[in-house]
Each structure stands twice: as C-alpha cells, then as structure tokens.
Amino acid sequence: MEGHGFIAMIYQLSEDYFVRALRESDLDGPYLSWFEDQDVCRFSSHGKFFKNRDFFKDYLSYQNGEDQVAWAICHNVDGHIGNMSLQRISFVNRNADFGVIIGDKRHWRKGVALQAGKQMLYHGFFKLNLKRIYCQTPASNSAMHTLAKKLGFIEEGCRRSYFYLDGEWVDMIEYGILRNEFNSFPLTT
Image (cartoon, rainbow, N blue to C red; front, side, top):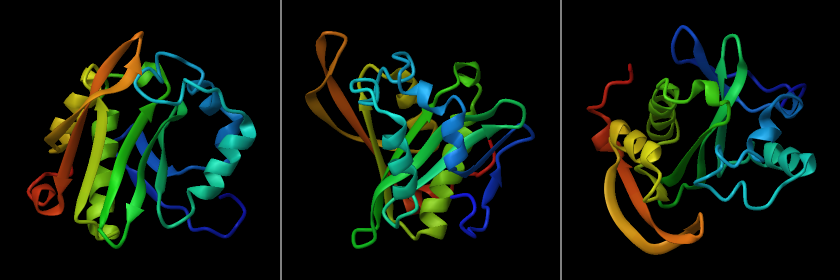
C-alpha cells in the first residue's frame, strides 16, 4: 500500500495498458461503483450484497497477505479500469483461484483481460511456483469461457445448478491449467 515502503511492481501489458498492485487511493476513483453495477457484477457475487468503503479498505490490506495476489488493471489515460487476482493460494498444494473484473465498460472486448491474464498466469507459475491455476464461472458467462480458453485453461467439470442468476439456477463450469501447459503458451498477445 502507499507510503509503507513497498517497491512498486508494474507489468506493462501494451502501449496503453499495465498492471500494478492495488492502492488505497484506488478507493477514491470509480473502483467502488463497479461493485454496484449489476452489468459488471452479473456473473459474480459482488453485486448481491452491497459493500461500503471500509469493506474494500479491509480487502486492500488483506491482499498484501501471502494467500492472494491482487492487481489493478490500468489504462494510461483512464487509470484503474479493473482488477485481476490469484486467490486462495495454497503453497502446500501449489494452486490458486484466478479471477478478473473489468469495471470500466469502455474497456470491455478490447483484449485487456487476455493480456493481463497471461501476465498473471506467468506470475503465478514462474514467480510463485504454482503447479495449477483454476477458475470457475456460470455456464451463461460466455466472455469468461472465451477468456479461459484463450488463456489455455481446460474445462474440467461442471457443478450443476450452482448459481442462482436472473431468476434461474445455472451450472458452474470449472477450468484449470497446469504449469507445463502454460510453458508452451506465448506471453505476447
């Protein structure tokens, strides 16, 4: 967090986009409003129960722990536009849960989640020495299915009637990627 002597880590994704650690000052921008936007949170639990600034301040302090890596996805002009994370990191089992949210809708369908996702997987496999990274998403979330497949994730299973979305029960599709499967994957877009 800012002012605590942390060394800034920035990965440049392209001429226009980069990722960095989340900062407390991100709470002063549009960050909190993303979790009130039902389009942005349609396929996650974020939009079900509204959260206040203190919740997100606690989340930011928690993300500095050793069981989670959370990054701000940023645009050179528009600033902080989304988040990406590895959560529930298990250094015993060497795995983690991958997550992403692009809160600024102006940056949807521009490939930024793919660019940031490749960098996050690289970080997980080659900086954190993970063996497996997994994710899950409702069957109706076509954007996340496309992203997972482009990142090299393999569909591993289905949990039936797992999510209650828009008045109906929806299956959850599970994906996973192993380090050796990512090795042959190019880091560039």
